[in-house]
Structure formats: C-alpha cells, structure tokens
Length: 243
Image (cartoon, rainbow, N blue to C red; front, side):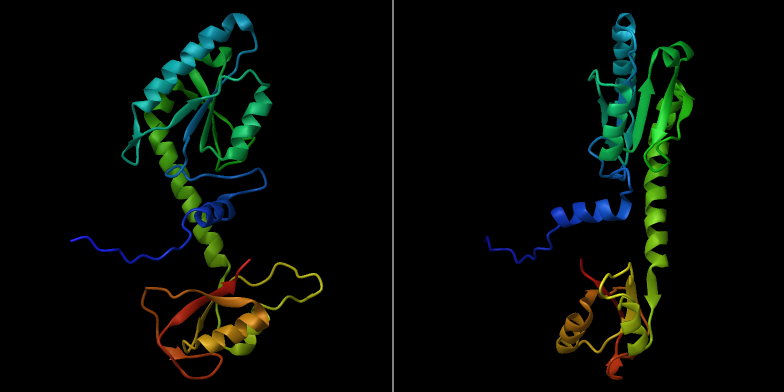
C-alpha cells in the first residue's frame, strides 16, 4: 500500500551553498571542501610556445588519466584540464575564485624535470610546491584529505572562538547589542544559554535584539535556570542573530 510520506523542508540547497561560502570562503573567493567539490583537481597547461603546446597537452591528458584512476572518499578523483589559451594568471585566478582544492601547473620546465607545480586552495594563493609527478599522483588523495581536515579544523576553531556560555540576561543583552547602534560594528556570535522553552519569550528577544534560538543541541547538557525568567530549563540552547 502506498501512502504519502511526511517530510519537512529545510532549504538544504541554497542555504547549504551559502553556509559553505560563509564558513570556508576568503577574500579571494570560495574554498570548496574536497568531499563536495565538483572539480577536485584542475590542471593548467603552461604553453608559452606553440611548438611545445601539443606535447604539454598530451602530458596533461596522461596526468589526468592517472589521477582519475585514483579514489578519494571511495569515488574516482574529479579532474579537469583547462585548455583555454588565456594568460596563465587569468586562468589561475579564475580557479582560485571557484575554490578548486588543488591547482596543478604543468609547463615545459616541469616536463623536463618530470614534475608538477602544486597549489592548495587552503593555503596562501602565492604558495606553490614543486613535486615529482609520480609522487603527486600517489599522494593526491592524501593531499585532498589533508585539505578537507584542515578546512574542518579551521571552521571548528572559528566557531568555538565565537561561541560564549552566558549565564545572565544582562550579559546576554550586552553580547548582542552593538556599541554604536547607528553604525553597528561586528558583535555577538553564538551564545549558549538556558531558556524555559517559551515561544513568547523567544519572540520578545527577537523583537529586542533580532536574536532567536538557532539550534537545540542533541548532546547532553546540564539542567539549569532560564536566564530571563529564572524558571527551570532542561538544557542550554544556541542563540544568535540571523542575517
């Protein structure tokens, strides 16, 4: 027997994209975690002379094929070759802004040395590392895993640094009130505070500060007293402003 399923909609498309941009982006563009990046490695052929172009492109094709034979997170590596004949800097910056985890440059000098030039999106855009081609092919999945873990730890550290445990109404209001209301500075963050579960109280705080309960943690938390009313509270909840 078929029945209609009961579901909820959490806007897991555009909201999740926005979350990734805000959590991992920087002044140079997006930084995509390797597990969700549609392109994990982009190869940029460096072809300053037309007579060496076909040789370089052939080497790029072979490198891409070798990389695609490897797996990361149980899936074949997603590799793209940018064959467009733009200036190297233009192409490079385009892929930086797109947030591709690894950029590979392969030119005549690299070909002579049987090496590639590797850039990671989780590092400074100016940071590059020359690596033997065979070594890079064997370590590509490991490097992607390192980028994934680095981005996670960086985001976790930022979240924890901007989360405060609050135990009084006065401290709560001070935390979420800008010092200059006419031109608000960056203020607030995540607040862990006890709450009695009243929707009317949450609505009042929303009207006062534009702050709402963002999450009720599933992990155990000590019971306490609501910082606004003094009534019993089962656990701390996460408060923050919605932008």
